[in-house]
Length: 387
Image (cartoon, rainbow, N blue to C red; front, side, top):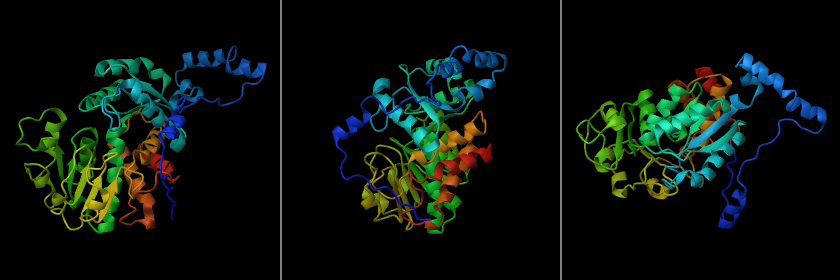
């Protein structure tokens, strides 16, 4: 089935942007009208007391008779916002509003943004634990690494509900889908690919983890100081863990050593890649330059050396966009009554995204459009099956 990808406007003006954000991007709407005294008596006093009594007797009633069970809290401390960095909670709120809007648009889920004026992991956990009866899932957003790893792990243990840091796992799911379909286009065995991930922050670590999980063994991670390997004595925490579980050839050095003979480059950092290094990659290479708004390498330059090029931008083919993943993942988890979002669920989501491309699979079409209305349904169904 051929799909029409919406054409990008030639120019988006500052006035248009501010007008679209004036007053915020979200509204709360009534599920049913309140037009009469009878309506008021049913939805508020005295009728509401019956429901409150029922929940007090059986807490499970809250899942069916409040909005909490299908409400996603989009939570950020504003420390790693898009390409803007640590801009604080107030400046992060427009982004979190946007994320909540995407939950409604693409998955039909209610969502509320919460920006917290603390960067202390334990304080954030305590805050959400105290608020936990108000929502059914937590989407962590734009929290800086390495704190994001600790925060997600602690919240998963503290909250009896789905928790996912989308900057990590949403990106990883879509990258896995893209690499899977890219390998098909090239006639390659996915497991045999040599993959270089530039950026060992939230997204880079999660991408490496999911690729290793599906059997791609030769994954090399780069941070600002070079290749993560067992020979480096400056690594701690999650980087030290991946230095021992990735990079099976234990190569050292920087981008030049990592890219020599590589099949796939995945950029999730603010660094740039010299064109001469791209020429050292394999003949049938994939280059995913995902930094926004400026990719690690310009798509037209990447196209000189790679058969498949992807970016995080909507004005080029093969957009690696988290919106392909997170709405369906959360809807599937909530519909299934899952208490955790597992690795198996993420892999199932990636395969569902990849499978949607079908007969249209081509070098310039390895993932579906974000506006393909089938995506959230397919991802949710795959996640529910994985549960």
